[in-house]
Length: 54
Length: 229
Image (cartoon, rainbow over all chains, first blue to last red; front, side):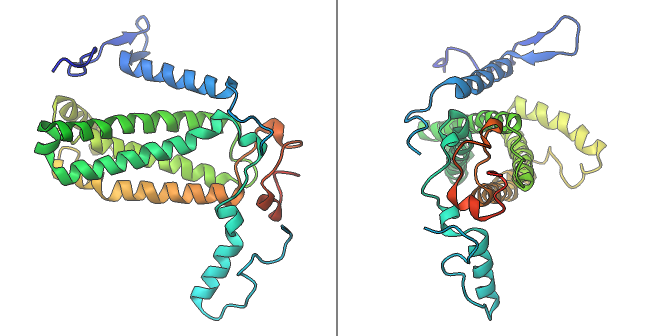
């Protein structure tokens, strides 16, 4: 079944920062980036309806 | 509508039974206008306040899809297209659940959401997070693939090291399925329910710079009014 652009049925690629203990898989790194982006966007994007309706 | 210190509607009586006493205490703690508020403070009109409810919605979808695949059985959700759809729905709703919960956690951490007698609200949130990790972990080790086998055999050493491996055997598939579908999700739902009720009781935490000038939930003023003061 090759419906996915990225095959999830294999071990993930890992990124390591030099020889340090900092090691993260690409899927986990993507999730962290998405969460950080959502957090920042939630703070800066205006909320529909504004603050005057309450 | 008055929001003074008088008893809430329906609570101005002297109870003679434990059920009456329980009702009076419930109404004093969570009067209807707090339980199901008509308005929220102006600062709630921000995307950062959406993530708690998004987490709950993802949890509801995860639980509903989990019930479906549990009733359908392993062969059904591994081999039929409908079963695989619900299996995927279960997996991805859990991914979103944790994603939304982490953003919710960051938002509440940076606005110090334990302020204003909300320590228990914060604590139940921490407990919900830890319980969710347990539900997620037991879910990963019952997927009966090499990934699950790897996770279980790594985790068994941890469990043995802390001395609980004999009663919480992560390589025991039947035991992990039971934990995943019964006690842990039930505990999670109860903790989340307590978390939400505490949010209703104390009101949504205001941003740090909004204490002095923003609107406050009217019902919250009936208490110690720690938000406005």
